[in-house]
Length: 184
Image 1 (cartoon, rainbow, N blue to C red):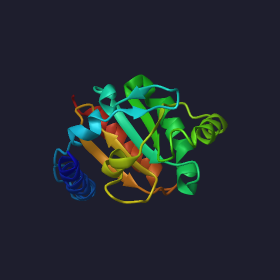
Image 2: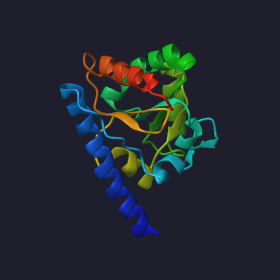
Image 3: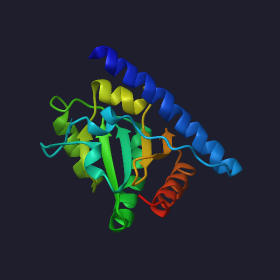
Image 4: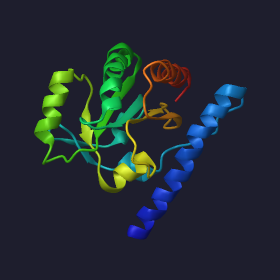
């Protein structure tokens, strides 16, 4: 089983790594973007949520999904969250869902995460990512924040690593608009 998980990680790194590069090239030169979907293990992994439940990314099938990997102690994450709150508020009626996945421990740091969510007034679901699920999402990179814009059909429209307050919000909104224009 561990061998299969390792192979899935390598596949994800290869697929999603090329998705980000291909997306940038396609936008810059007008070329068609290849269809890249996250491996089933990413979409099907059950993760704990802040409200005590469990869910999968697959639960948002048919919606445009923004998956944000973050932590309370991360400065760039703190800068990005207000933009995600705005996106969740402004695009919810159009079928866009934002899901925040913190890298913090779901038991040991739950109170800190709850207080952070309350203080920041986060208006979208929060879950916890760890182990292989975190490695799949972060492509083996330790840097956060990372965000994915995933279309209704499950294809990765754009993968963002890091956050720049002048560049990232308009690029993310453009990726969301692109996803909304696509048919499922």
